[in-house]
Image (tube, rainbow, N blue to C red; front, side):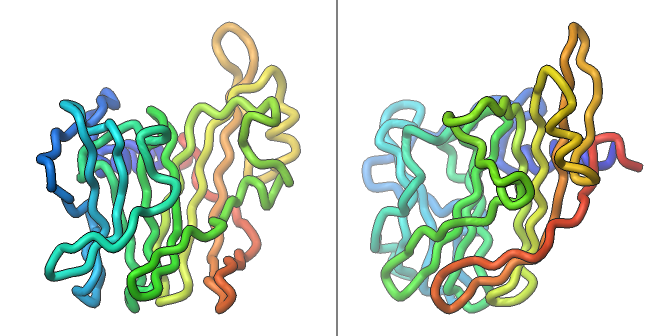
Length: 231
């Protein structure tokens, strides 16, 4: 099952074990540890983690740092002790664009849920962008508390193609009473029966995206991705 192996490999890249243990780190008082891939190509910036307490998860934040002096510039929005599972710096992954003007940051917000944030970097400032969501593009629905979607897993994979172009793979697993969601997803969805009743619905899609001058993201048409039992 190639896709399953790829998913497990990605989770291992976030410094977790095959049993999906939590990766923790006890930070020293003024320790800002650079995350995986956190150094920008221009050598002038980095993304670093800092937290408090024995597990490192109290008051946890990611920060944009000035290099080589390793001086804190600002705290990144939407990464804090309320939405992280791990605290170790190696459990967070940054993918910088070649021009060091954009950085994508991935981290586990739940056991099997990986969150992807994209920031536009301008000098000493980093602005959180309204990131891509292929599932929303296809269904018109976002996965949040306002609907009845029961998502059990979400593994986005982000790869730069050029300074302002990227490729996104979006793989998710849902649990449902029936197969209506899979029917709506068409070739981007696959249903299988669950022991005890109900269905497991896989969503797998990929598309190229482009960062526009106004800070918005334009995505191409989603194409079918790989499913767990694809050969």
